[in-house]
Image 1 (cartoon, rainbow, N blue to C red):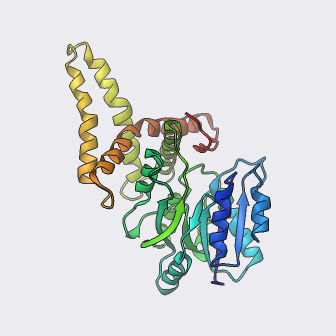
Image 2: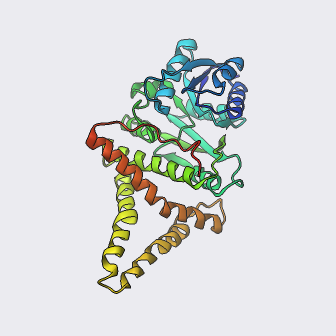
Length: 331
């Protein structure tokens, strides 16, 4: 057991996946907290039998992963005040053997504030959507600008910036990393297995909803932290507008005046797919899979724009968006 590390797992109706998650955490730590966001499948009872300290979020306040992780950390410190490092993990993920020790070792030996590793999909062969998730998780090794939901952090650094932004419905991890970086914090992506994710994504509608959530996240990031990472979020917002709105509008408006000649502009979409697959491949996957991933990047501009518009509408009306959940969405 590693006494200096605690684990905070969050979830909602994860079923058997939660058992796998908590048992994998129990392998390395005593300090374990499970935060539940309104489960109805017995998740709270299961977590309790596995020895986790339980936090049940008030359902009268909108659920967010950010809020759950913050609440989990406070419970962790109240119960185990000696803990200095926290591993956040989603309840549908299994922590890989050896990860806790490897990540804690790097944080203690060097001046990183966040360490993450390779999250991989449990069944990438089960659907193209699972495969796309697995490819998305395969991020570059070395210094990074952000982490995902599974990561180990220095608790002191996390608390110094106020933790996660409770009100964010998505993209809370990159937003936190912006504030950590502003205080000189550094993030490291290790070349090591970290967690195994179980997306269970089999429908196009699930993929679309998840991509829409990503669009909402990038729009909010651009609004909260303009110019960060050389304006990366702003570029993503502009890209969604160009590929999902400006280009199709131009084709429609010019189709009649050009006697259909404007349809040649539609070639921009397949050409962009080839460009992404060729110039920005995921090196651990064959070219066929990279073509699929590139196609998803281009087609995904549509749901990205939908998420951006949802965020903008919320800004204009003064109403916060509710969670955008892909789990349970059917085709």
